[in-house]
Amino acid sequence: MTRVLLDQGLPRSTANDLRAAGWDAVHVGEIAMSQAEDVEILDFAAQEKRIIVTLDADFHTLLAVRSLSKPSVIRVRIEGLQGTAMSRLLWRIWPKIQEALTTGAVVTVTEQRTRIRYLPVR
Image 1: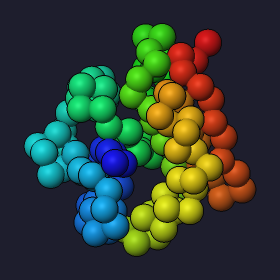
Image 2: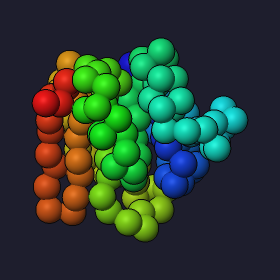
Image 3: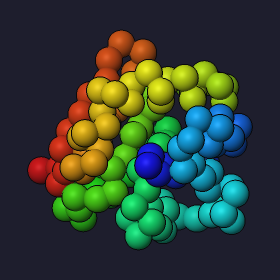
Image 4: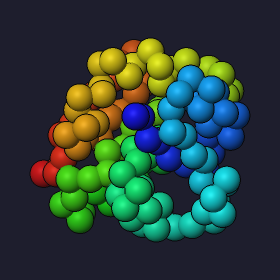
């Protein structure tokens, strides 16, 4: 099952769309973590075996500095996506990134491309 944790800044409605499609999706605002520090979110995702979806570059940095191999993180670098558009983006790229995320990876998504770097980042 696909287990994701949506970071603050992403539409909460994306979690609803993903759940309707059978994903185990949670938004940080739904679990009283909307004010949590990035390191707390990172640790929670690792403990819960969730993939973080975020707009924030700090997660990639934290993983690199800590030499971690989990959790995987998807950073979306496309501003202004509404809930359904974000869900569609994740569904579209998922087949290309799913295996890497299972192994441990940081993924950066722009309008032009999807970049995968395996963890730990060196």
